[in-house]
Amino acid sequence: MKEMKVLLVDDEEEFVKALSERMKMRDVDSEVALGGEEALKTMDEKLPDVMVLDLKMPGIDGMEVLRRAKKAYPGVQIIMLTGHGSEKDEKEARRLGVFEYLQKPVSIEQLMKTVTEAYKKKFEDAMSAAAFAESGEFDTAKEILDRDKK
Image (cartoon, rainbow, N blue to C red; front, side, top):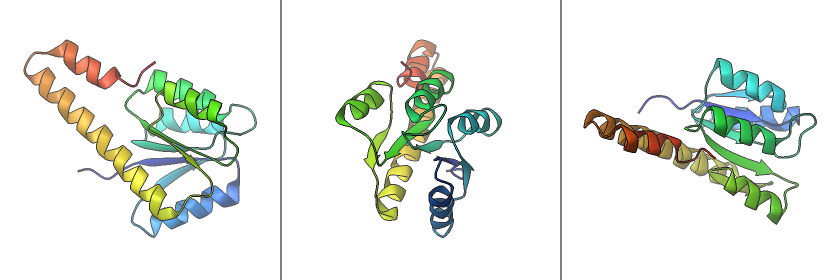
């Protein structure tokens, strides 16, 4: 498999930079975005495989980033990581196609496991779609690639 590209999005600069460092110690490089607007811009420039996204941020919040990201890039796997979410937020995030919804604090081991699972799902979906496209079943391939798109 190719090297995983991860985008970490949180308005708490110290938290997100520390998280990036902890991932780097586990041989996973990541980009950091300090808010929703920066996240969307970064996605346009360097499309990630997996995004770890905070829910509550000033300006463009995590739910709106999730909505826009899934519309523009349905293959990106998004993990919502929040300390301020509710059951209603989780239900909405799942409806919009979030891969997983985690509450802060989360152990780095649990987060890394979830990031790896999300990456594997993206990779497996892409391989499956390619196999269908190669056999001429383009509608099925498109359905696989768009299944998370709402």
